[in-house]
Amino acid sequence: MSEVVDHLAELTGYRDRDVMDVTLVGSLRDLLEPLSVAIYRCVGETPNERWLTRARMSATDPVATADPLWADLEALPLLADHAARLECFRSRTVIVVPGMPCVTLFPLANDREVVGVLEVQSVQALDMAMRRMVSSVLRIYHNFQGLLDYSERDTLTGLLNRKTFDESFLKATMEMPAGNDGRRHWGSEARYWLGLIDIDHFKSVNDRFGHLIGDEVLLLLARLMRSSFRFHDQLYRFGGEEFVVLMRCDKDVDAALAFERLRRNTEHYGFPQVGHITVSVGYSEVKPSDSPAAAFERADKAVYHAKAHGRNQVFCYADLVAAGHFKDEDEKVGAMELF
Image (cartoon, rainbow, N blue to C red; front, top):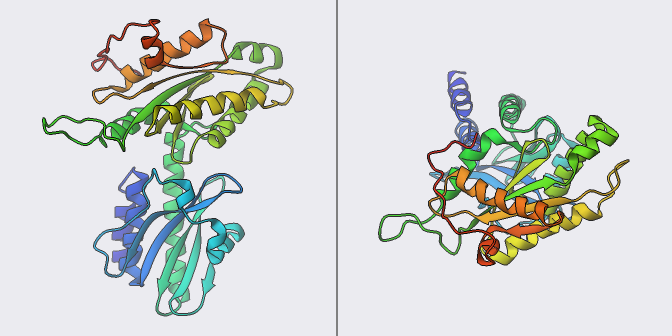
């Protein structure tokens, strides 16, 4: 029992979801001594949903392995490729597949939905005491994940909130490889973009239809964002009608297409009672020396330009500088706090 308590204490000692998943599989590997333990999450949109390996450890692995968070969706296995996982995911029940190895699958859920499965492969089937222990550990894992959601996510849309932005931004910039001069530089595999999305004339929506309908517009726009961007792009609501995207793209054109896709999808979507709305979008590439405030300010200038020149448009800050609309001041706002 003391060993279980020690592992639970370690599991709830982190506020980083990646570390929590690694800690969970490591703890269950030590407690159950199975052939392997893994967490698989469902990512992507219907009908192209895929399995993403969040953490996996075999009996002999010194550390956990996982798919890259920026993995290409098409390279991941389809849900239907693993029938037992899919049954566990959809039925929300524990599934046991006898054989060698014996596979036991447990659903992983948050407060809203099932998001993945925990898979245990063992020589013999887990007995009832082991299954109860795993279920109990998963309840604690679920509750702690819920606490993280409460502190990190916007209660209306379920998107990340502004409190989490700085940390995510700094994590992204830390992925830059260091050059010979010891300074960090972008490599071909690590280019990030920050986009700012603002609903056009949103005040008139609230004035004409009321705040309940306005909230529904915000909720539906959040859903459009999820379907317009990739599963690993980080989506935020900063408050009111202002949304932020932090995304990784190797090419300028890919970033431009992603933001244009959201603009187009929003323009053509029929919002109940309201009809059609539009968004103005500004974005900027994140620079190696950027603070969150500096990147945000450049994107904000591009949004302001979009709103001042007809709205329902997407502008890149660098393109506006090249066209002579702004001076490339390479602003240093590092000492300022965005929030």
